[in-house]
Image (cartoon, rainbow, N blue to C red; front, side, top):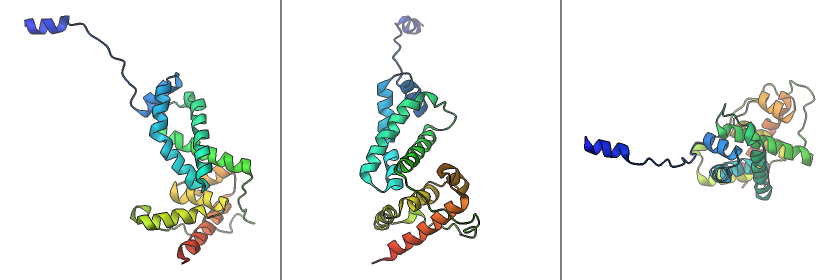
Length: 197
């Protein structure tokens, strides 16, 4: 009993708990904690860069845009409420930044003459990326980078990131038919690039 009494009399020191989850880090960073923001950056900058690189096909532009994304993250962090995962919020912000980059540079998508021109296009991914060998993956990434910007954007959004045509239509402000047309043309061009010897 004396042992327990002595433990209860010991002074209690409260260490400041370090934020560990993305939500805690985001809240701390929004409150001005620069270390928390730095940890968010360290944990997520590769993912942002990778997405930018896939959509842009240019490593220099991807690096620049990654920095722009994190500037936006810093500005908008207070608006992150935690209703969705931080990674979901960051992904959407990154895609929007890339699309704004395309708009600023005047990248245009081809528009179909009528909404129904490509309604019968079957959406079949090239291959499951989990089963692609490293050599094939490098060849695929190189081929994607050679696509025209409009084709590449729709291909990455649909086949890589998993957006549906109605979502792409809203993001890019084009018709669903245009999205389907761009995807179809991107896949055809990729097949040509990948079968060239």
